[in-house]
Length: 489
Image (cartoon, rainbow, N blue to C red):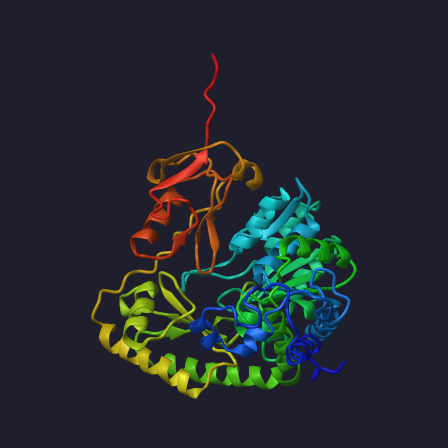
C-alpha cells in the first residue's frame, strides 16, 4: 500500500483550499466566528479543517470514502485486518473491545491493575470480572503484568469466560510473554483483548516488545497520541478477523462516539500513520538510543536507580520497552510524588507519573539530546540536595488483597446507596470507584466489600499526597455504599 498517501488529510486540505461558503456546523465557520485571541493562537489553517461529516469528507460512523481508505492504510501499518479510528481516546477503544464480546452476566478475565475504562465498560455491559493479581515487584513497589501461569489457572476455573484482557506493555513498559498467553487462551477458543495504550512504537522496531497484532491477539486498543505523534484523544482499535466480528465492532464504536467527530483529530491519525509507516523504525531507534544514554547516566547518579535489562528473567518480566524510564527515588529519602513537585518547581519539568517510590519519564520521537540533558541536570541537582540528607524509608509493599466481589459492578453502581465516613466503612459494599490516577488502576470497585486493609492503604496514599481519585467526595472522607436492608423479625 502507498503509505505516502494521506487520504483524509489530503481531502481536508483540498476542501479548505476550495473555501466553500459554509451553512453548517461548527459555528465558528473557519475561525471567523471564534474568539479573536484563540483564533490568532490556534491559526486559520487548523480552524479551516475543523469540519463535520459532510459528503466529501466521509463519515466515521459509516466510512465508505477517505476515512475508510485511511483506516485501511492504518490496518496495514499496524499489521491488523481492520483498524478503527477513535476520537474518544484509547478509553473509547477499550470500551469498544469489552462491549463487543460481553453481554449481561458474561465473565471476563482481567488483570486487577486494569485501566478504569475497562471497568467502566464492564459496568455498561453488565459483565462479571474475574480478576487476576498482577505480579508485584518487591524491589520497586510497582505492579507488572499477569503471568502465563495465572492465566492458565483462571481459564481452568472459568473456561466459559468470553475474553481475556492483557496489558502489554504495562504503564512502566514491562511485558510478559504475550505470544504464549495468546496461544493458551486461543486453545480455549477465547479471544484476547490487549490494552496497548502505551505501545504504539512497538509495532515499528525489532528491539521493542512484540505487539499485540504480531502475537496474534484478537483486538488491541493503541494510543497513537501517547507516543506516536497524533493529537491528544486520538487512538486506534486494531482487530484480527476470526473470533471478532468487525461489523459488531463498528456498531459498538459508533454507539460510543460523538456524531460531531473531530476531523483535526482524525487527520492527525492519518498523518501520524504515514509518519510511523515511513519513518517509524528510525523514530523508534532515536528514542531507544536517547533512553539508553539517559538510563546509563541516571544509574551513575547517587541515590537513583533506573531498571534496564537487569529486570528481565522471570515470567512477568519477559521483555520491556527501554523508552520508559522508571526512576526509583526511595534512596533519596523522598517520595516519587515529592520528586515530581520538586522537578516542576525547580526545572519546569513535568513527568508522566509518580508513585510512592518512583517517577516515570517517557522518551519519545519528540525528544532530543537537549531535553534529555535537561532531565539529567535536574536529577543530578535533585540527588545533590537530598542524597544522604533525609532518612531513607524502608520499601513497604502492602497492597491489600483483591476484595471480595459481592455484586456485579453494574448492580452495585445502580443500587440504592447511602454516604458513610470512609474510615468507618469496613465491611460495607462500595458503590463507586476508588483508584490511583495516573495510571488509573482501581483499588476498590463497585460491588466489592471494603476491608480495613483497603481503608489503611488509601488513607496512607492520601496523606502523602498521592493522586487517589474516583469518589464523589474528592476529599475521600466519605464514600457511597449500598444500603443494607435490616432483618425483619
